Image (cartoon, rainbow, N blue to C red):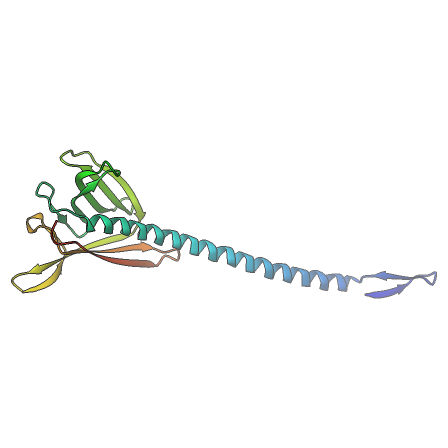
Length: 194
């Protein structure tokens, strides 16, 4: 700050234009730094929040599928049918305590990129269908004992004439916030005697 003498021997405080420009520049740089930090924090939060929600939806969907597969029943009226993108089996459907025997099906809806769950009471064909999670892909594999090879093996499909497989593996793929594919794999062992 400069002291300026006026004509009557009075001293007054005054800012020069140069001082004002320097002060304004410093304040602008500080404001820009604060705004940039805040903006990056918001973007990071949104990215983590979105990615976390997508992953949470997928994990919850896999938990439901795992519970249903673990409780699959060997019922001749509703065979266990497994394909690469779809699995269908007998189990308990409907709300507790009014659950009854029915068919449960999990599959990939390619139109909406969603993991779908359908369930319907036996022997009726009416189905209740709902989307569980937004996914890019799902692949099922089926584990069984091959008597010819005398060992356990994985295969890509399963027919009900073979009963129920020993295990089902589901590999689910979804898109993360930064457009990267994320894969989650779950293996569900099915109790032998049901």
